[in-house]
Image 1: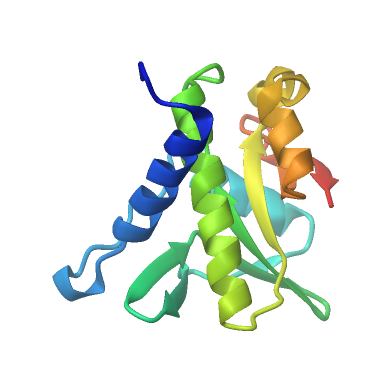
Image 2 (image 1 turned 30 degrees about the horizontal axis):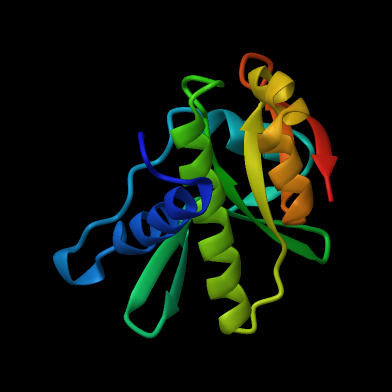
Length: 157
């Protein structure tokens, strides 16, 4: 996008993530194409995955976090992003904005359940760029998964 700074793009992404969930019209966001692979990867490591997205509501804003999972006494939420083009910065902005929005909504609800961003292994190279720096600067928890093997390669707290 020409003429827009990084901050403006993140703000637009946050607004888009918030407004994409409109309960009155019955709109539920579609799942990313790699959603099933992330579910299988979690199940393989012993997580019990809820069949439904986690609904998060703050005032008139509603969001649907892709995955809610439990293992032993630990619960997590996972937002899945497939990143069809690993170098598409707009897609990265949207993912970061959505994550930050969901994290803030959870905090406002006093829900301290950790939120993770699921990132496919083909994004590994991007973790050495600005995208990776932003993940670190914002303390974004994420997991790297292999889409073909349906396994979790690493967790980043």
